[in-house]
Image (cartoon, rainbow, N blue to C red; front, side):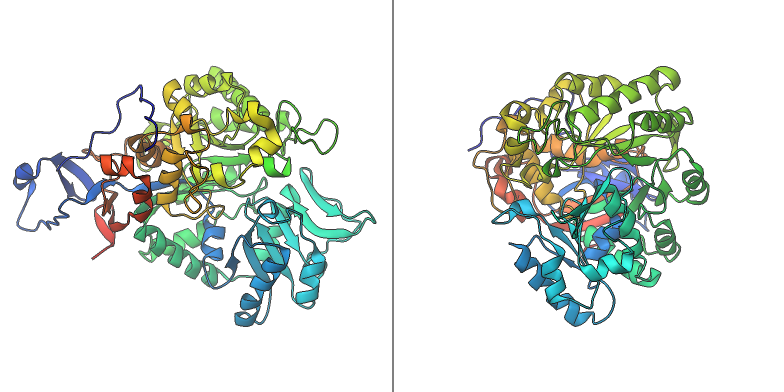
Length: 548
């Protein structure tokens, strides 16, 4: 049995109870005792009785990279972690067989999960695929592993200069190894992806939408994946095509790249007017990831690779400050990738200045006028006093619970035990009144919401169930708080508070039905049941998009 869970200082969602959710014209008009539902019926009313199934707001994934999630889940590419460099190379042979021409593309490798944990190089790919360009995208979404043919097609030579915040790694002789990091990887990736046609991409999106509906997901935030526009993979053209064809089975909130020029975002705001598809804010990167020592820290990494090794900002502070202030001055909310404690601290400094100058962002989103929330993404380790600043500034903490166990032993290796204490502090967020939003960072982890909920309430990996008792178990949270973060919290991050995220009158009828009460005492005592819980129906604006 797990130790007792922390209390929640603000009113939690109500306990599960028998209820009838009454819907008209896509919105909830009442939530009543089933015995009172007759007052809302008409001769044309469709009545569906799910018995003792668990009905809740639709799951809203607050951080998805839709293009990559769809593509890597399709027959066009592969997705795997792999056990070693050789294993990853061998896994690409199946793709080469079914796709005899063009680029070979995969996602998911993490060298720190291999034995031994050493970086791969172009040489193994060259031996297996001497005449095909191969691009293998890392599981953390920050590194490319390329073969020589790929480097040649992309025009990268030993004399190439990477963009600011990026790197072309070289061996001791100065030869390219095939490893491309951060901004340099983001600059090359769009050129690789441009080899897929719009119809191929649209077909991949259709498959991704079907899977989300089957998991009870009714909304997602499609997040920019690059520091520069045109490289961020926000495919508003594909989403618009699916919307016009009546094929959207989830609400899509777009967050394109934040730059000094807001014209692209403002054009999306004008043209994407459907409640199912809107541009809701902007996204930018401020640092990288801890496992590669590119997250920006106040003090050097515990296992520093060189003197003063504390990562770096991907965008200079003054440039980021100017961009955020400009966006907030126009009422546009901003979401910033911040993993290291110093990146978080500096981003909060800018948000604090923006609030003093302009107040909280406010604009019309999802057909509703509302105060919007600036948001920080990932937030993996903290200077402790900044947690209270998050709450005071009402900045949303957009987090992905399965990230806790992606790199077993990695936090202790990179940051040491003292800084680890302030990593993914979910229970502390609740105690301090910080609003969380949950997501997956798909395809970094799978889009399935059940491992997310499991990780949040157990602090354990959904596959290995390690570590026993949970990593920093004092930071586990109750299921009701986790569900609230995955519904109401994500709505806050999308600027849709008051329209999405709860089951109450006037909200959109975005509803998920699961075959087990996730808030039950049975699940609390046996959290493994979470992983055996399945959606049996999904509704978007009252329209059934999954289930019999």
